[in-house]
Image 1 (cartoon, helix red, strand yellow):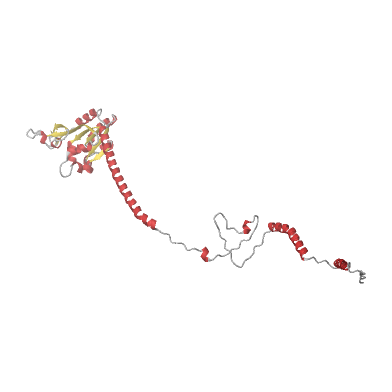
Image 2 (cartoon, rainbow, N blue to C red):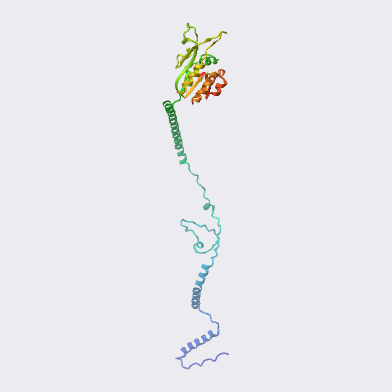
Length: 326
């Protein structure tokens, strides 16, 4: 049903405003009857207001929810700088969890050929090292020579100290017939070298040689066989005429004289050296040892008895050192 048309006024002066008023009323009626369509300005203002109102929750959602990484067709190469400035935006956002994609960078950027290391310094240092080694060797050689000289000096000083210090006193008793008959080699024994061998490193108190002599007055004593070897050296020579027996045998026995002299000398010496292997001196050796004196027996193996070898504190077999006394 259409509304009734308005009654138009007759006067022309109020017709124009009246028509405008009527058109406005009609437009409002149509707007109330039809669904309202907002204008551009209203739509823009409303959209801006809505966007402004929705912007805050959206930002909160973006900060709360992780951003989805945007996949690009081109591979990205992350550049690193000192101080950690080359991080992506996702890494800069606090609490953001991002998925790292492994992107293969170009070979020109990742694989850089290594430059050959120069060895000029080592090559230059090699001659210097050789020179230092030679100098070190020469210094070691000098030190070794100095050490050898020091050792020699120490040995000489030690020998001097030993000579100047206390040395054991020794007395030597030689049974000349036992010594001469016991030697079966060529040549003659040098009694001076024998005395030096027995007294080395010790002070000689007395050396006595017991030599039997011939009763022939035409033969000088100093030239006889058992006396002549001891005359040039530091021996006290005790002589005794040979005894002739009815069967024609000759014997010179000094057992009693030597035994008495050893016992009497035991209080004045530290060592008694008996150059004889005769078992007749066994009891004299025991008596001397009871006085605290060291007894040394020196003789050839063929003329040494088992008793003397067993009783001696030290036994010297002349067969082993005969070259030193020739």
